[in-house]
Amino acid sequence: MISRRQFAVLLVAALSFPSLMVAPRAADEFVPGFEDLPLAPGLTAVPDAAMSFDSAGGRIVESLATGRIDAGSVADFYARTLPQLGWQQADEGTYRREGEELVIEIARSGGVLTVRFALTPR
Image 1: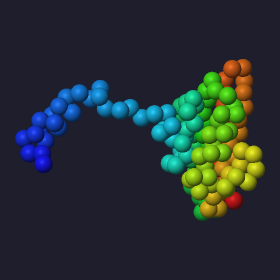
Image 2: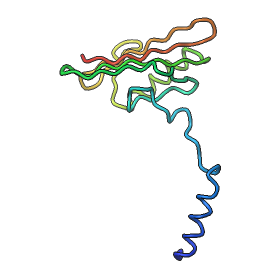
Image 3: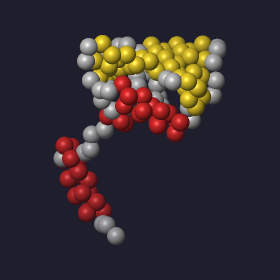
């Protein structure tokens, strides 16, 4: 068992070296405006592009992300990930869960992929 003195020494050592702390991976980031929608690896959220509105009928959320990544890998990421979060695929790029519909639109302009996330009540 560890003594209080040993614990104190370990705590001071850990706090003295913050560079040893693990930074979050890209897959641990979430799409702005969504508390449980992971941002696909290779995508970066567009600053100030998220919009959220709550009404009696439900919530409306829209957000954008961009990246130099293959559209197929983004679509595959969400097709694999969203069912684990309770979303059911209704159509290509369209998912439904608990009275809400999430549409993920993927477009390429030049070498940059833009992904639009839109959540509306069903």
